[in-house]
Length: 121
Image 1 (tube, rainbow, N blue to C red):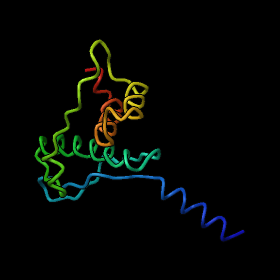
Image 2: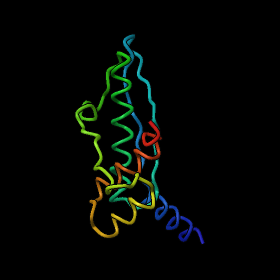
Image 3: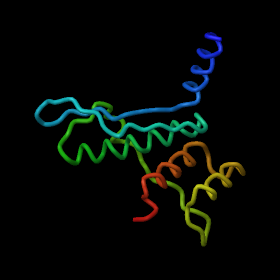
Image 4: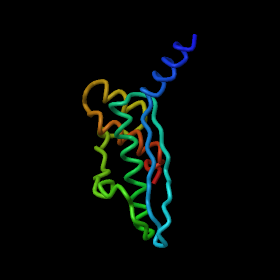
């Protein structure tokens, strides 16, 4: 019984992609923000996490903070344009990914873009 509980817990962890932003304030205080977790498909989830952490990192830097993972500031967060006459939705992105018309990174970025409500701006 105990072994099956441990195995189940490990399976849950294996299917989970997480991240959080670490930065330092101008006063030298270490802070954490933007804890994010995706639990669907690790090959796509890692890009959704990357997108959100990069977005948060850029926001933190604009406010004068020093981002610890500086590479997050260099990422291009652009997403592909949706097919003519359509808007991005989770369903459209999933469909195009299944048809291999967008790759894992593009799909992850689109999911995060939608989750952050950037399609509304």
